[in-house]
Structure formats: structure tokens, C-alpha cells
Image (tube, rainbow, N blue to C red; front, side):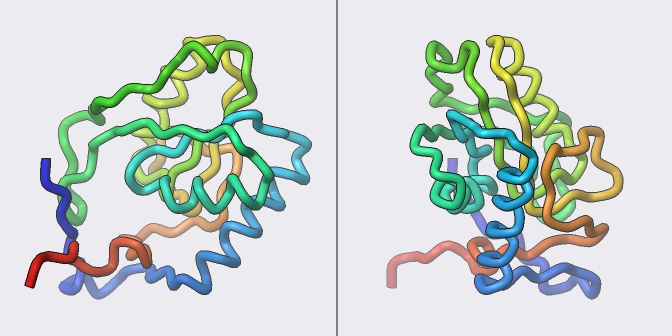
Length: 167
């Protein structure tokens, strides 16, 4: 499957996150988590959007055990599949049982991707909490930790440009 860039240049209303703002956002999110008293043993990023926030939070929180779960839902700007779909490779679920897990994503938009992942991980007997940079008002799942609520399309610094191609 080819990953491609969703161009939002025609949208007048959008939230643009810069790399500098991202640094502040992940530090503030990490502080929320630490202040709550939750100490995750494992951090699981929802790929692809949660990979960079998840990586940053592993360092800010001192979590060394990390993994990712692949879920496809968005296909373009404001376009999704009918339902989120888990993609291979799948998690190694043996180490999840009884662990404290922090699930990280970039945004809880509809919340359906986050709901799918939380249900899956809780089904393995883990204590699971969630953290996102952004939450949208329509989400079906309120994350345990969030940096900001917006109701517009979000342009993240890691996906603001199309993929690099050969010259």
C-alpha cells in the first residue's frame, strides 16, 4: 500500500502545528500524564499519526518499552473508510497482559480508531490510558490526556508535505 499526502491547501479553516509548537505540546502532554500519577510501562503508538508524538513521549516520560499498532481510517482530507481497519503486522500481545499501557495518537477526530485500539488492548487485561495532541468535539472517546481541542482540519509538521520521490 502506498502512503500519500492529503493536501489541505484548499481549506480556509485549518489548524497548523509547527515543529516548535509540537515540542511544547508533547512536553505539556507529558506533564499532564506525570501529574496524574499514571506511570505507563509500555507506550503503544497508533501508526502512522501517533508515531512521532509517541516517540517524543517515550523520552519525556522515560518509557523504554514501545510498540505500534497499525490502523487505517483516513484516506484523504476529511475522507475515511467506513470503519477503522487493523493492518499487519499485529502487536505481540503476550507482554500486554496486566501492564499499564499508554496509547498515543495525533488526534481523536471521530474517536473510532482510538475506541478500536482501546477495546482491543483492554481485552488483553491491560490497564490502558490514552493521550492525543488534539481532540475534536465530535469524538466518541474522550482521551485521558489531550493537549488541545479544535474543530478544524489539522496540518501536522510531519505530514505537511507530500512524500519524497526520486528525481
